[in-house]
Image (cartoon, rainbow, N blue to C red; front, side):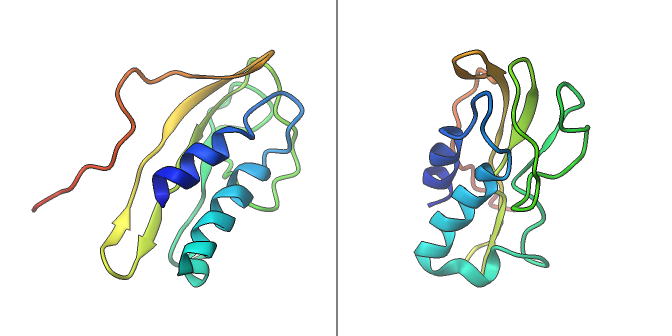
Length: 118
């Protein structure tokens, strides 16, 4: 579910798209899976943030209320970090560059969930 939410939200990363559509997309998918009450604080904080390259200031959270349009050349971090009562807090995410035609994933490692056995 988190990987699906993450992948679907990437479709919103393109010039002119409203940044809030990234977390809205994630929240809709996670809510549909039965975890709507966990899509808000104190269970989750943000679905990503700016890096200071582009119109979203470094550290400003991607949330449902962010009324900023994405611009080509902007770099942002997208992460569907989520608390789930069955497993605890799960995290995954990547850094993206908004390009003229969409986005470029900047990480070279595979996006997958790792399990901490500790």
